[in-house]
Image (tube, rainbow, N blue to C red):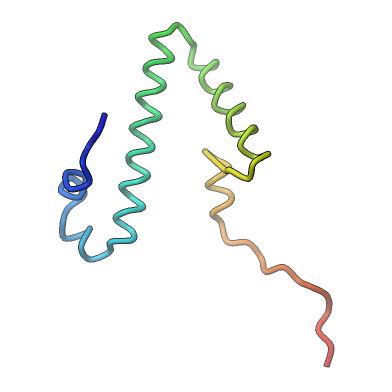
Length: 93
């Protein structure tokens, strides 16, 4: 399902998109990702896969992504959380 960016902005609301373009782009990207996930789940179900098989497939894909540094799904949510600053030894005066 292809939706042109202009149409996505209209769906989101031009006032919002124009006021906070960075946030709007992030929201649109998230929405597109969700639509792709729903479409893929429907195709997998139509091919005879169960919901549990689909969840396991997504877990396996996420694990493969970890090896390359790509973070998806719940891992992406955790990676987006603020991390404490790394310490590089004690400060000396």
